[in-house]
Length: 487
Image 1: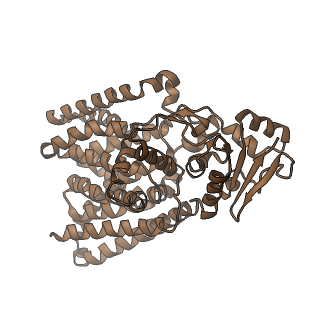
Image 2: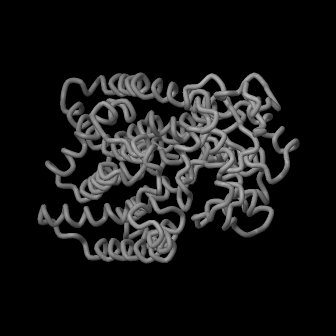
Image 3: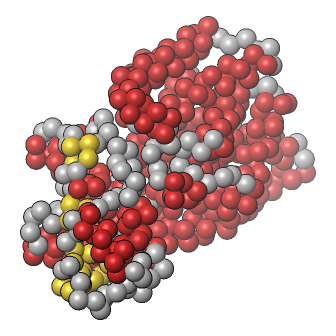
């Protein structure tokens, strides 16, 4: 086995172990979407068909999802334990990105050392780690496949069949893959501006993929656009949450979320690739950066997702700058110290990326529901009528539905769902007993779940008017309270 593959495998193990150490610190999951995926996987395992109408979410709404991810998880249950599927497998899938980043970076630079360092950087992008560790996320499949599709296009002569298969599969898995279609259009424009002739085979592949994405998106999401119009592109996010879901991009957010090393080296890599070398692959990757920035600027994708994607792209582009640096060192007196320089650079990566990633991921782990909170929801499941409606934090709606098996007022899956964010906020925080109880009557609320996250999110110590005769404490533990609504 080549030395570079051994080192790459060590990078993979380092990335995976880092993620596993963090993930195993919590019994629950750090994102509410994990419980959405758990519920739908359980439903498919029990019924062999997807949940089209969810009776618990928003007390009843239609679900827009192809459920390919949930079918894959349900299928794995036939021969793998749940702990491996939901706790370990997502970390493995995210860690596998280092191999794909290495492959793309090596194709871009033809320098294995630069590609390995690029792979190392990609494994410790702060916003990528903090938003992906300890989650059951569809992006554990989507992101590796998007970048592998990119690699297939860069090596089309040997990977044509895989490119075709992924062209059908990617749009079916998740609509975010449409970013590739947008990037391919930017790619054609960039090459046209630079008067660079695109290869016939690549042109045909790009047209094929774009047309396929448009066709599949039209088939699956036609009803959404007819019902919601352009608001479908904004995922029907409530106006009160719009600013937090779709943030703007500035230099400080880039430095904080991506890290100073990949940001500087990535920017230099873009300049070297498209301005100096006019590398065809650099134009392709730059088109992806442009597509990501365009979607972030127009607020059409979630800020965290856009920054995660951008971080991986900049890690790949870092290989170009590193390759240039290696070539420069090799022709200077510093050549005899290149091993020491390599070690120093790895230490610099650790200092600027490892610790921020660990800090961000630790905060995400702390946000996972505690055993106290999950037990409180289990109490609801065993001690309340099955048709009860539970009021709680909108960012714990899927957790409430999963653990209590009771209807919720709202959660953070907004497509085909009414805007109830302001009403939930009022019911939990209003000092006016009349206003909050009237709303609870409107939604048929039977129980209120107060968690630590609810207190932090709504800046409250307890349910307002908790001492009123309208509320009765039914269950209390160190980190959770459950009130019964009596009025």
